[in-house]
Length: 191
Image (tube, rainbow, N blue to C red; front, top):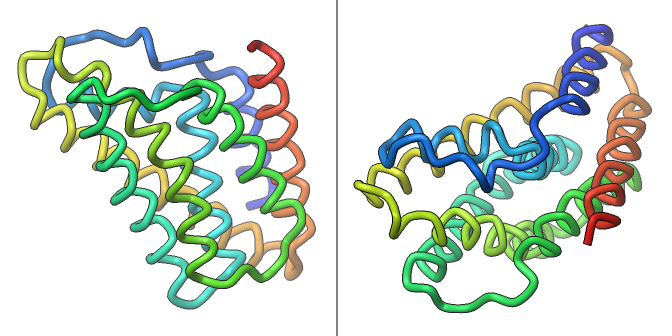
Protein backbone atom coordinates (compact mmCIF):
# COMPACT_ATOMS: atom_id res chain seq x y z
CA UNK A 1 0.00 0.00 0.00
CA UNK A 2 2.89 2.36 0.73
CA UNK A 3 4.27 1.71 -2.74
CA UNK A 4 0.85 2.35 -4.29
CA UNK A 5 0.53 5.64 -2.38
CA UNK A 6 3.97 6.75 -3.48
CA UNK A 7 3.23 5.74 -7.07
CA UNK A 8 0.05 7.81 -7.04
CA UNK A 9 1.87 10.82 -5.62
CA UNK A 10 4.67 10.49 -8.17
CA UNK A 11 2.17 10.20 -11.00
CA UNK A 12 0.71 13.52 -9.89
CA UNK A 13 4.06 15.14 -10.47
CA UNK A 14 4.02 14.25 -14.16
CA UNK A 15 0.35 15.10 -14.81
CA UNK A 16 -0.62 17.85 -17.25
CA UNK A 17 0.14 21.31 -15.87
CA UNK A 18 -3.33 22.81 -16.17
CA UNK A 19 -6.83 21.93 -17.25
CA UNK A 20 -7.78 25.43 -18.23
CA UNK A 21 -7.07 24.70 -21.87
CA UNK A 22 -9.24 21.59 -22.17
CA UNK A 23 -12.08 22.37 -24.56
CA UNK A 24 -13.14 18.94 -25.80
CA UNK A 25 -16.88 19.28 -26.26
CA UNK A 26 -19.36 20.82 -23.93
CA UNK A 27 -21.03 18.05 -22.02
CA UNK A 28 -20.64 15.93 -18.94
CA UNK A 29 -17.28 14.39 -19.89
CA UNK A 30 -15.70 17.76 -20.67
CA UNK A 31 -16.78 18.96 -17.23
CA UNK A 32 -15.59 15.75 -15.60
CA UNK A 33 -12.20 16.02 -17.33
CA UNK A 34 -11.49 19.56 -16.15
CA UNK A 35 -10.76 18.72 -12.49
CA UNK A 36 -9.46 15.22 -13.25
CA UNK A 37 -6.89 16.27 -15.86
CA UNK A 38 -5.95 19.62 -14.34
CA UNK A 39 -2.87 19.19 -12.16
CA UNK A 40 -3.74 22.12 -9.89
CA UNK A 41 -7.36 21.05 -9.44
CA UNK A 42 -6.41 17.41 -8.94
CA UNK A 43 -3.90 18.17 -6.19
CA UNK A 44 -6.27 20.50 -4.35
CA UNK A 45 -9.19 18.09 -4.48
CA UNK A 46 -7.11 15.09 -3.43
CA UNK A 47 -5.85 17.24 -0.57
CA UNK A 48 -9.38 18.03 0.56
CA UNK A 49 -10.13 14.31 0.80
CA UNK A 50 -6.86 13.61 2.61
CA UNK A 51 -7.37 16.49 5.03
CA UNK A 52 -10.85 15.23 5.84
CA UNK A 53 -9.43 11.84 6.86
CA UNK A 54 -6.95 13.52 9.17
CA UNK A 55 -9.81 15.31 10.88
CA UNK A 56 -11.87 12.11 11.02
CA UNK A 57 -15.48 11.59 12.04
CA UNK A 58 -18.07 13.67 10.23
CA UNK A 59 -15.33 15.71 8.55
CA UNK A 60 -14.73 12.81 6.16
CA UNK A 61 -17.92 13.70 4.32
CA UNK A 62 -18.74 17.26 5.43
CA UNK A 63 -15.44 18.87 4.40
CA UNK A 64 -15.54 17.50 0.81
CA UNK A 65 -19.27 18.31 0.61
CA UNK A 66 -18.56 21.90 1.65
CA UNK A 67 -15.95 22.11 -1.11
CA UNK A 68 -18.42 20.85 -3.73
CA UNK A 69 -21.16 23.26 -2.58
CA UNK A 70 -18.89 26.30 -2.58
CA UNK A 71 -17.40 25.23 -5.90
CA UNK A 72 -20.90 25.32 -7.38
CA UNK A 73 -21.27 28.89 -6.09
CA UNK A 74 -17.96 29.80 -7.74
CA UNK A 75 -19.10 28.09 -10.93
CA UNK A 76 -22.27 30.18 -11.01
CA UNK A 77 -20.23 33.35 -10.46
CA UNK A 78 -18.00 32.35 -13.38
CA UNK A 79 -20.96 31.45 -15.57
CA UNK A 80 -22.41 34.92 -15.11
CA UNK A 81 -18.97 36.53 -15.56
CA UNK A 82 -19.00 37.98 -12.04
CA UNK A 83 -15.39 38.83 -11.36
CA UNK A 84 -13.48 37.04 -8.64
CA UNK A 85 -9.99 38.52 -8.31
CA UNK A 86 -6.84 36.41 -8.51
CA UNK A 87 -8.54 33.13 -9.45
CA UNK A 88 -5.43 31.38 -10.75
CA UNK A 89 -3.37 32.55 -7.78
CA UNK A 90 -6.17 31.40 -5.45
CA UNK A 91 -6.10 27.96 -7.06
CA UNK A 92 -2.31 27.67 -6.69
CA UNK A 93 -2.53 28.99 -3.13
CA UNK A 94 -5.14 26.34 -2.35
CA UNK A 95 -2.66 23.61 -3.28
CA UNK A 96 0.02 25.19 -1.10
CA UNK A 97 -2.16 25.80 1.96
CA UNK A 98 -4.01 22.49 1.81
CA UNK A 99 -0.63 20.76 1.64
CA UNK A 100 0.56 22.78 4.64
CA UNK A 101 -2.60 21.85 6.56
CA UNK A 102 -1.99 18.16 5.86
CA UNK A 103 1.70 18.45 6.78
CA UNK A 104 0.92 20.21 10.08
CA UNK A 105 -1.63 17.53 11.04
CA UNK A 106 -3.57 19.70 13.47
CA UNK A 107 -7.16 19.09 14.53
CA UNK A 108 -9.08 21.98 13.02
CA UNK A 109 -12.61 22.78 14.18
CA UNK A 110 -15.07 21.30 11.69
CA UNK A 111 -16.70 24.61 10.71
CA UNK A 112 -13.30 26.24 10.23
CA UNK A 113 -12.15 23.35 8.00
CA UNK A 114 -15.34 23.62 5.95
CA UNK A 115 -14.89 27.39 5.53
CA UNK A 116 -11.16 26.92 4.77
CA UNK A 117 -11.83 24.58 1.86
CA UNK A 118 -14.93 26.56 0.85
CA UNK A 119 -12.92 29.70 0.14
CA UNK A 120 -10.62 27.79 -2.19
CA UNK A 121 -13.54 26.00 -3.81
CA UNK A 122 -14.91 29.33 -5.02
CA UNK A 123 -11.71 29.91 -7.02
CA UNK A 124 -11.82 26.41 -8.49
CA UNK A 125 -15.50 26.72 -9.35
CA UNK A 126 -15.01 30.13 -10.91
CA UNK A 127 -12.35 28.72 -13.23
CA UNK A 128 -14.80 26.01 -14.31
CA UNK A 129 -17.70 28.45 -14.66
CA UNK A 130 -15.78 30.85 -16.86
CA UNK A 131 -15.60 28.11 -19.49
CA UNK A 132 -19.25 27.12 -19.33
CA UNK A 133 -20.75 29.89 -21.52
CA UNK A 134 -18.69 28.70 -24.50
CA UNK A 135 -20.00 25.18 -24.16
CA UNK A 136 -23.02 23.51 -25.73
CA UNK A 137 -24.47 22.31 -22.42
CA UNK A 138 -23.47 24.27 -19.33
CA UNK A 139 -25.72 22.17 -17.06
CA UNK A 140 -24.14 18.89 -18.17
CA UNK A 141 -20.69 20.46 -17.88
CA UNK A 142 -21.47 21.60 -14.33
CA UNK A 143 -22.70 18.14 -13.35
CA UNK A 144 -19.51 16.74 -14.86
CA UNK A 145 -17.13 18.95 -12.91
CA UNK A 146 -19.10 18.44 -9.69
CA UNK A 147 -19.05 14.67 -10.14
CA UNK A 148 -15.37 14.70 -11.12
CA UNK A 149 -14.59 16.69 -7.99
CA UNK A 150 -16.53 14.27 -5.79
CA UNK A 151 -14.69 11.32 -7.32
CA UNK A 152 -11.31 12.98 -6.67
CA UNK A 153 -12.36 13.74 -3.08
CA UNK A 154 -13.28 10.09 -2.64
CA UNK A 155 -9.87 9.13 -4.03
CA UNK A 156 -8.23 11.48 -1.53
CA UNK A 157 -10.23 9.97 1.33
CA UNK A 158 -9.25 6.45 0.27
CA UNK A 159 -5.62 7.50 -0.14
CA UNK A 160 -5.61 9.17 3.28
CA UNK A 161 -7.23 6.24 5.03
CA UNK A 162 -4.88 3.84 3.28
CA UNK A 163 -1.79 5.79 4.30
CA UNK A 164 -2.95 5.93 7.91
CA UNK A 165 -3.77 2.23 7.99
CA UNK A 166 -0.52 1.05 6.39
CA UNK A 167 1.89 3.07 8.47
CA UNK A 168 -0.10 2.90 11.71
CA UNK A 169 0.83 6.53 12.15
CA UNK A 170 0.40 9.70 10.21
CA UNK A 171 3.97 10.31 9.04
CA UNK A 172 3.34 9.27 5.42
CA UNK A 173 0.32 11.58 5.27
CA UNK A 174 2.36 14.46 6.66
CA UNK A 175 5.13 13.78 4.14
CA UNK A 176 2.52 13.81 1.37
CA UNK A 177 1.35 17.18 2.65
CA UNK A 178 4.90 18.52 2.37
CA UNK A 179 5.10 17.28 -1.24
CA UNK A 180 1.73 18.84 -2.09
CA UNK A 181 2.71 22.14 -0.47
CA UNK A 182 5.96 22.12 -2.48
CA UNK A 183 3.97 21.67 -5.68
CA UNK A 184 1.70 24.54 -4.61
CA UNK A 185 4.79 26.69 -4.11
CA UNK A 186 5.98 25.71 -7.57
CA UNK A 187 2.60 26.66 -9.06
CA UNK A 188 2.65 30.01 -7.24
CA UNK A 189 6.16 30.74 -8.49
CA UNK A 190 4.70 30.78 -12.01
CA UNK A 191 2.80 34.00 -11.30
